[in-house]
Image (tube, rainbow, N blue to C red; front, side, top):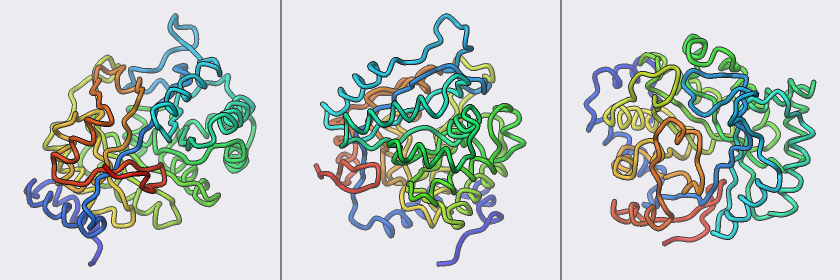
Length: 343
């Protein structure tokens, strides 16, 4: 099957019928995942600090260093949170925080080594390209030196946070102090070269136009073509509550159309995640017929999106019931998409 290119994708986004695009994406999903299984991972987001120099206008989570509610979690607090995750059968830790100028490689090496020692069954799927870059700057290290040391200390894989829209004109508007799209790509390619798995995300609905959305999706495909290690793509909608940027969020129709387009374009990425965290359970269920084959994590804890006033919750059993209710087989997976057990 020939690859879809930018002009065709833009035409689908502007003029394509929602159900027709969804049907096409569903056919791609069925071809890639003919077994009819929808997966999820039992995980926890641990936001180790909310102090951030980036000050993105779309973010309601970050704080200035001198804010009354600014924090850096004590290591023992982090270990307690991971212990709760393990007690519930969890396998994935997602540690993300702000771009804190006071945290260098020594902090993360000590923390990650101890996490690996105490919790050897947990996959440390943490940080983001922007955080890795911040650590390298704070530590006077190259990106590659930083990644090697983080990996050796216990960082297993890197989530695709901070991608927003991989178009610098958009990034300069909503996150002017964050790395550009090419540096985001550089971190991901260097991580892949070291044998680390990664994921890619897209936050849409803030200030970009349809051409930017299409460009983002194709840049992700091209990074993967260049040797990337993306296991999944996760598009999610901007949440305007409590943010400096404000505005409104994208509609459910927009979400489904862009999700489906992602599945059609990203022929080199095996998994597409439905974002129940921003869309809720009902829309996540519909997304399974628009190209998604994974529901991401159960998220024992989530603070960043919640800070914007979006607080959907879903237990493991609710996720299993949602998958079964949509007519699929449900399976718990690892970060690397190995099946742990089917329900």
